[in-house]
Length: 468
DNA sequence: TCGCCTATCACCTTTGAATCGG
DNA sequence: ACCGATTCAAAGGTGATAGGCG
Figure 1 (cartoon, rainbow, N blue to C red):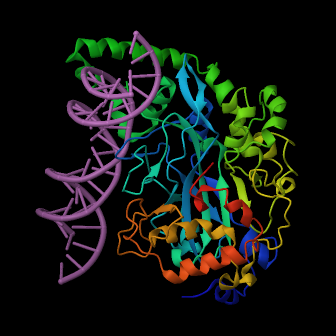
Figure 2 (cartoon, chains in turn cyan, blue, purple; figure 1 turned 180 degrees about the horizontal axis):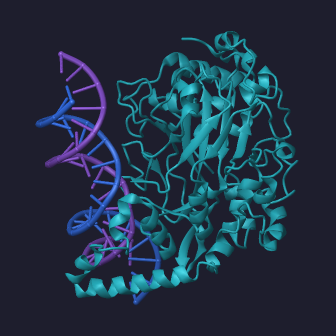
Figure 3 (spheres, rainbow, N blue to C red; figure 1 turned 180 degrees about the vertical axis):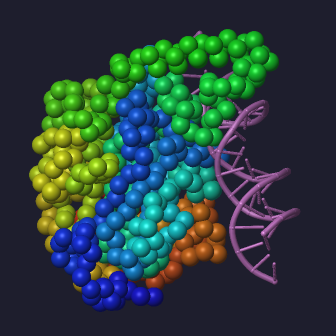
């Protein structure tokens, strides 16, 4: 297996023109991720995206699809996706808008979806968009298919992680970056609540084509079978039509619960600014601790709050993600907070780089001594602080070690493939490599803070069982 | 009674094997 | 024998719906 260090040496040539910075920047600081179909996502987000979750698992729509650039063509990377709670609340749909319905339920087992192509060379990831089409969401906490487990009526947003590693067991996290896209946040539901979302789904999801009104749809035929259905359908149709007519005047929901999304227009409701300060300290991971103090419009606040703590990627024509962590440019928690909401902040990525406010528990004041260790910090030499907790937990759990709840990583790969599926109940199914476990354990214990943002990892689902 | 969840349905797209022709 | 295009059936995804459950 070729180490990253080796790769670096092999990569002696000048970085691509796109890499304005030096070699280090090329290796660790220029990874860019953009969301495909941003407009579609935006459309959904403006209304309040809902994602159906079912026991057998349901795909997302729109599904996550991103474009990557700035990777080392010959280095291998692993792409992961996990879902992060937006806040510590449970919601209910009431009178055309989302309302807080109480405290969130205990976070289900955090799972991470591993892109089936992982690991693959950077060139592979960059040559075409990366789709997470087959990622499925479920509300079955006992799910054994590796689907991402969510709670209904709770809000989440996907996080994309890209890790430079030859395989899951040799992950060194020397280059580990996380991206989130504000417009991808959604409310998990078992049945659509907002009819506008239903309409959007039907209009845009090819699988739902059968429910479109256009042309000679079979819906009427189906409805005719049952008068009651016809009535309901008619009502629905009316609602949808009305909704369409109201497109210009979003429901309260959009404003009160999703105002966190500022979109690109920058015409955010002023209210956001008023809340920004309070929300600065709030993050999905700090919800439990702080939610008691939050009494108003948690929904919108949460969203914005979440984003306000993320780093921004230089804006471009395409929808830009918020760079969550960029080990190497470790943000400092307070620097960018409150400066603006997510939307306005998006335009000033550089200035917001230092921003780790999303790590409430973490001592953000700790010096980020080892920023993303460029390749010169070769993987094998990188101490594995808490960043490795996730893998550590996962592997330890797999090994049946007590006291550690595994973090499940799902891969469509079969068991025979390098990256297996770690689903809950099957500890022995994909036994981890012992050396990895030991290695990480050691690193976590003894080098707890080598990485720039190591500490933060312990706050994230990807590396810890509890997201809260 | 209400809100949420789930099984089932009909409709549709996607996928891959089978077939055909060059 | 090989390859690409086409066909077709199975698999699977979709929202709608009714009924169950707490």
